[in-house]
Image 1 (cartoon, rainbow, N blue to C red):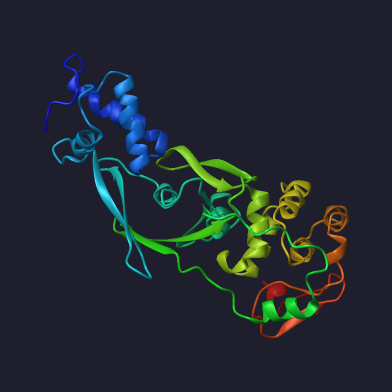
Image 2 (cartoon, helix red, strand yellow; image 1 turned 90 degrees about the vertical axis):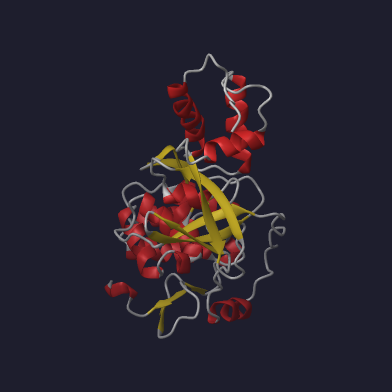
Length: 315
């Protein structure tokens, strides 16, 4: 390896400088973040100007320097591999590794429930939402939906993503469900502290998490888990914010009813529930909704107008 640093830089200070810059990216480096670390060290006059990005990458991957190593993530259905750089001598968050699969990604669904303390379970797959390459279709015009279409859509099993990556870290195999979100700028995203993630983990906020779980309960452990999450969020949930996010989603189906069902069974007050009913879309109130897809032994709540799985009330 060439001598890549200025002579005035003390050898003992170099690893700390490299790791300090990489901590901005939670110490999980992709090609773009490697370049940013490289540029930052050049600007701070650590690196000689003649040192190339390729030489710098070889330096931080050198076993002799004990800085970074490669981690391979493999897509299950076709074996496609992506490579990330992680530290050799300090731990990183599996959530940070999962988020490195896509730019502008955030942790969602069951994983977000866990990070917000809305479930006692530790979900095995990590759910991450990634930006779409194409914009979402325009919002559906009122009147497009029929009850027959709704019945047909929810009679089928839920479609699950094939975009699943696996990686081995610290003796554990992790799965990442890479879900798509719209190409528009997202609202309702926050950051939460997590072990070994100095910059925090991007995650859907509580309100956005509950909306997304109500829409796709199959990625949240099922309707029973979503109901329990609504119970745990009862004292802190910002209902108006939740309804703003639901409206921004431009959903075709009447998911207001799903949210109202969870709130009703979770013991929310009449005033809290009225904040949902008052903001429900008028063109959706006449439909009979479904809490989950492909339910067997379903029951009807005639007051809300929604089918729900038998046994959920006893959980």
